[in-house]
Image (cartoon, rainbow, N blue to C red; front, side):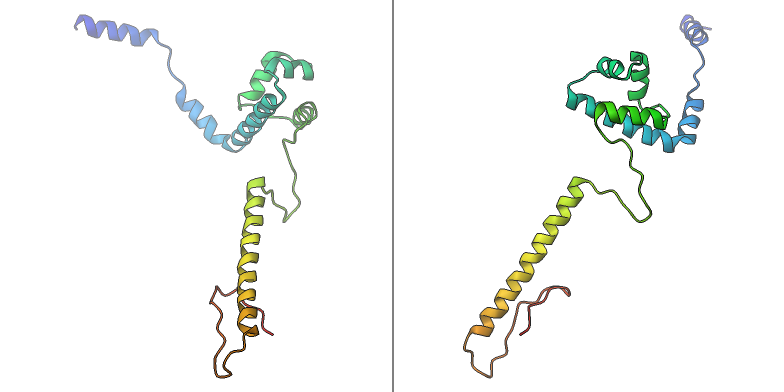
Length: 160
């Protein structure tokens, strides 16, 4: 055996065994709550930024240790409802919403997109209606057929 091979074997023997398979299995098994916990942690960090606080400020406000806050913001914490409630109160944010059947949460971007689409649809229909009245108010030849730009199925000009 060469000197290099011997050094490699010694290095490998000195390193502790890796338990990465156990960690991967744990993450797979707990994927649902870890994902939610990560989202909560990111929201907490955003709220800290908005308030200009650091983790020590939050620890003081909650009367807990800095180490506990560090665990909360790492995204690996299985939050209790009492902890979430305290965080919501201190940070003046909402971390959880319980929806009734049939309710859904919409982001501000989604709401704005729907409003913009509604305004666009309104203007299209208004344009078609104006076009209709322009043609109607003309003194056309009685043998001329009135035409309005075609639109999609749900767009129509007012008939009079």
